[in-house]
Length: 241
Ligand code: GLN
Image (cartoon, helix red, strand yellow):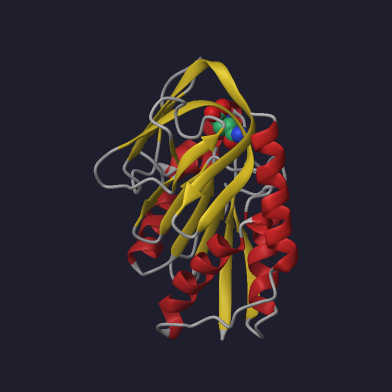
């Protein structure tokens, strides 16, 4: 089996250890004997819509989102939509999560139109949400670090990834964190997220491999260290909400 990961705008949107998510996906696939190729997909390139099995899209400052938002309004955005329609999965963190939604309204400047493939909308608030983030999901804790001014609200087409236990999550109001729609998952969890949340990494891997390999049952890995890191981070976060 072979996995193709397209890292969206790694030069413009990758902060707070986001690249670690690509490393975690790559390593967890390789530990199972799956060959992995990672390609950057960024502004100035012509995206091949038939290549990706999985997109990773990290976070970024409002300025970077401006540039990236403009690129996604062109043929590259259409290519990403075609890949998703062809069964590719996507994992999005913070600024990347916001730009797969309908729009991101920054504190200053014009609204940045999003790709509109995730039923969420984001509007910046005055206070930044910064700190540890813990949310409960059916598969377990989701732990990470958040730093955003954006407040994200889900429409009826998306469901929350988890329920906030510590931190602010999507908007600091409705206790939801992240969003799931089809094979697209968005989260406010930086840190990086996937090394401490192996259940989420494996969900994305099996969705991505399905595109060209049919239903895949991943062999379980020895995740004692990952789980210990998850529990440790959750304990620290709960101790200092
Ligand atoms: N610029 C966006 C915000 O402030 C996203 C920030 C991020 O990706 N960490 O909400």
